[in-house]
Amino acid sequence: MKVTKIRIGGRMFILDPQQDLDQLRAEITAAATSGANFVYFTTAGGVAVSALVTPYLPVRISVIDSETATPAEQVAQSIDDPPFATGTQFDG
Image (tube, rainbow, N blue to C red; front, top):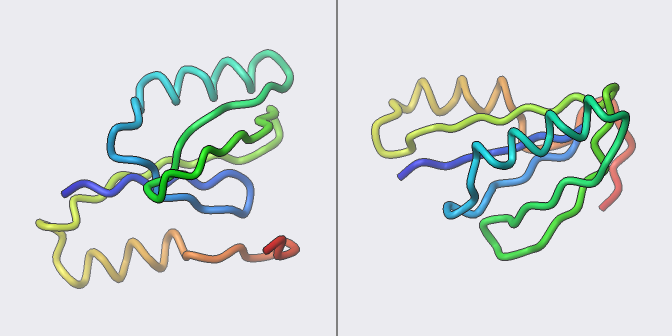
């Protein structure tokens, strides 16, 4: 099973498996190149999220195959992409 995570600024979300990644990437790119715009996606828990994307906001998408990843790879992934915001104010 593939798990897709998106980190926008300091917040990390696990995406709905049905999320169209190519479309989401295109929307993020368009928002960043236009100056700013909202991008919409759904989390694995069914929460609809709208995030304001700007050219100055870091966005990272990572996909991991949780069935084939070794425990060491899963640990490395969690270190590279911690499940919490670092260096930012926690907003709940």
